[in-house]
Image (cartoon, rainbow, N blue to C red; front, side, top):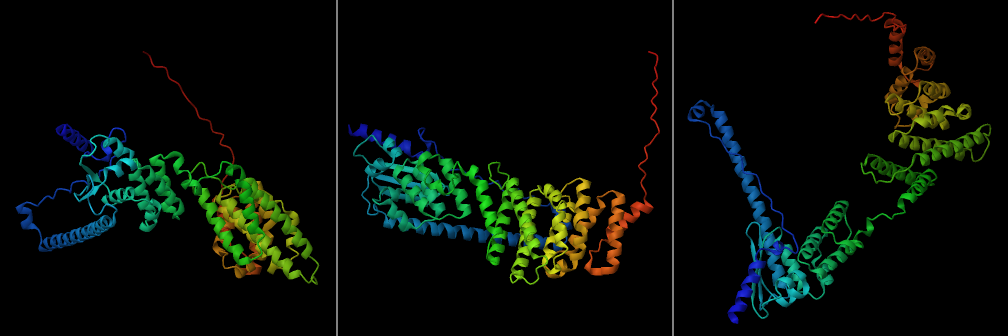
Amino acid sequence: MGGENALKSREVSAMIKQGFIADSTFSYSPSRTFSSPPPSSTRPSQTQSQTQTPSLSQAQTLFDMMSEEQTRDSKFSSDDRRRKMQDRVWKLLEDAPFGGGGGDVMLTVVSKDGFRVSMEVYKSVLASKSRFFAEKLRCGTGLSHSVEISDCDDVEVYVEAVVLMHCEDLKKRLRMMGEGVSKVLSLLKVSAAIMFDLGVVSCLEYLETLPWTEDEQEEVISQLGHLQLDDSASEVLLRVSSDPSMSSRADDIFMSLLSGVLEAKDDKARREMKALLSKLLKENASDDNSCRLDVSKDTLYHLCHRCIKSLIRCLSEAIGQDDRPDRGVLMSEITREADNIQWIVDILISRKIGDEFVKIWAEQKELAALHSKVPIIYRHEISRITAQLCIGIGRGHILVPKEIRFSLLSTWLDALYEDFGWMRRASRSVDKKMVEDGLSQTILTLPLLQQQAVLLNWFDRFLNKGDDCPNIRKAFEIWWRRAFIRQYSAEPDNSQLQITLFDYPQ
């Protein structure tokens, strides 16, 4: 009978010695990493070595010395990491509940580089805590077993998992360990592999209480998806899981956030949140994820119309009321609304949906008329919107028909000329050359006769205003060459292509 039990014990040991993972009921195998063999070094022939210059030989020697030094440093660093890991493992075993020995299972964990750790643990604990061990150790009651887990990625994590199995309060043990997200995920992976259900639950609960960096967040999502823990991981992922109704409510949220910035009372906070939302919206636009939620075109244009109406109201109230006690406040509102429009237009252009706004802005005849009646010190921010659109058109970010381009200049170009000096002096964010280049390119997209009308008008203004008028001489030169030097005739070519067919005898 004793011999039969010993035979069964040897069979169990032989089954488990293959590693946790070789069992057909739960397939998990530590990944193997094979490094490529070093490139074969080809030594030069004797004749070649004799003809080489001494400097080349010295250079090779220096290279060899540097390579040897790097190899030594790398080996020292690797040995140092291994020594620290060994120290941590010995510390774990010293403090382990089974540290005094007396167990009936000799469990050995072997790393890929051959580092071995042996522990005397209890079969009753392994079988009660792990469904994997319960299956493997169900026969041979009262016998001692020898179990080896080989080729492990991280010996320390396997030892910690075994220690956890022997602890009464797993949550307390995890808290005392004070491990970060990556180590807890490693413990979770091993616990799932050996079907240590209580360990899986404890790791998940501990993960749920930890803060994550964005990199750790991606690691958590990836690992939990790979382990396929189903509902048990849902609580952990609540902080990153979107509500199904989010897609229907997203536009309302965007509208609320953008409106809040447009109406903010504190200028410093307003500038800071504008920069933040601009950054986040640009990230949205550049993300290739088809499931991403983004602010809609309708929301952005609704805000544009609202700001334009507010701007017209402010200008109307400001005209002819120099003695108003709140005139300064009213003027600051004009500047603020113009700045709001610039911000929304910038978002539209970055999304390549700004074409419609050019038409809207070109049609603001009433606003343009009011603009000319307000002091330049308050109104110049409005002209920055026109400059912004010209830059977009000049760079090809806004594509509108020539009729709309000419209408834009007809409505707003005189105002831009008048305000350009103030724009340049009052705001460091205005790039003079960028505005001039954008305006030049916009003008040059017009039919030649319209170019002529615009540029002859500019010529007279520039002679009288100098630097207070945008310098678009480059556009003027191109127009000149188009009109007088490299004339292009659009007359149709009346020549006809003649085709003659020949029949050759067979």
